[in-house]
Image (cartoon, rainbow, N blue to C red; front, side, top):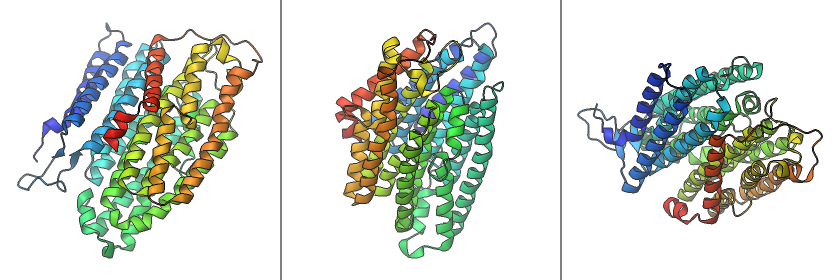
Length: 481
């Protein structure tokens, strides 16, 4: 096996950080709160390395069988512009979640070590999914990420809601993984290989078979669960509501992007000759996901459940880029996933900022009058919700604009119309929170906790990202398009 270690530098940095956190967690004399900062520093170094590799154009494959010519179709691990850009999404999500987690966990030192270890393991799994040039590697990354998230969702074992969230996520996730693995087996039966480029080479438009179509359908089911696409979305609201708020933010961001990273690579690169068969399924799922997510979100009174259904709707928007099945669609989906991760983590961070002495303020009515009583909180929450709704000049507007543009280029006019209508629907429930914060009087005076410094830092970075991409998107757009 030939391995080019230089192509694995971001992953090696994360593994090294994981080992460092593990070692320091065993040293009682060291404050466990420092483990969060170690996680941030390690993810930051990996982020810088990924950006440098992206700018230098370092691409190639590794884990190639000895004695074979190292072609693109033979390396099990593929480093290219695509995987490096997704690394940036994963690492930005990890840094932001670690920042808001430090204050969220408080001084419960014993819980912080395993918590940050699991976040790093999940991040490593995401990176494997994005760079996997083999279906088996994608599956291994998926399981590494998923197992870590199951534990994190039920991390507060003394909380019945958290335990229930972890159990539901585990049971439904196990079924989804089984569907995904069975789909891989069927595609292997049809193509005789699990290599992504190899599948594309062997499955020509004339060689389609029922075995391939069945395997493709099962892959859609498996990915549909991981990214919460209707009708595979039922787990999301319960898990988001019961899981620790920081973990709900994490699940809604990096892992969703990882699911779409593998989704896009497999369907666009491995199954282009079956596009006629799977594209119409993706179009229908996109319209269903956007519509169901937005309509049910309107009825929610719990802000975490509202954001859960909002996350489902945003998965539908990303599917527009996949349905377009052109280079612009792929690039616009990547852009949207980046801005979505930042603004969604920012929204959950604002929810954490609204914690009271009695716990989190999760009912939307609890936010009455907060815009004036807690102006910094009101500013952060308003900015993130406006971006999620797609108002200019925020990153959410730029992301939706390019998604719709790619669909128009593919002549998917009905999909664009449905997306535009759903964007208008979503504005209602996002603005409802803003109206509650600035135009409603509180029913009772709540005592809010002081602003934690690390949480404010995380939200400031998220706000800068949302505004920078919204006002000056040229550098990012020039790179992607």
